[in-house]
Image (tube, rainbow, N blue to C red; front, top):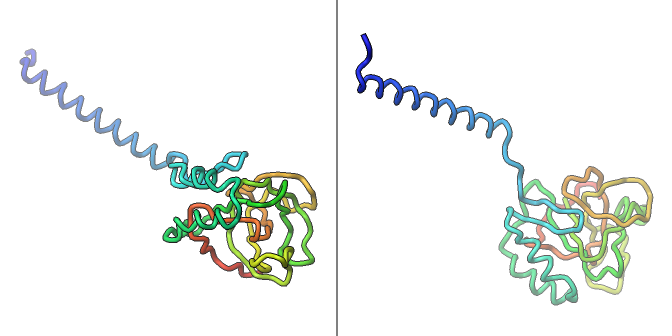
Length: 192
């Protein structure tokens, strides 16, 4: 005996609901297994930065370019309330570094050049240290250094860009950087 129209409708409706539920379950399982790529704290090779995927740091960094240190610090104070992301490198803009900022193997006199960061690009710092080496005793910064992420630990004078995923530590003089989009309160380095 053939099913009535209402029983057929019920059967196919129930089958459709089951198929839809299985499809949604598979989609959720795949999205958890392969999460969408993060858009926060990414930097292209030109030094542009995105923080929280909304280009805040790109905008902030570009408004700091070409300013004196004093003018850039005044603008950076707008972010005094915002701590950098915990456990992640924090962005700092290289400023007033004619041509480039040397990246060293350490922030001490025994360090050597392992590259140079372009002026007006972002370097990614993990921590800060005060050492006995002040490369510019004429400023008011003192011997303060940032340990940044860098692409090599080999001696060289090549210009490059810091990336948050770089695997080697490098050291840059804090007197030629300014915080970007945060209050600058990063951890103190344990072994400078």
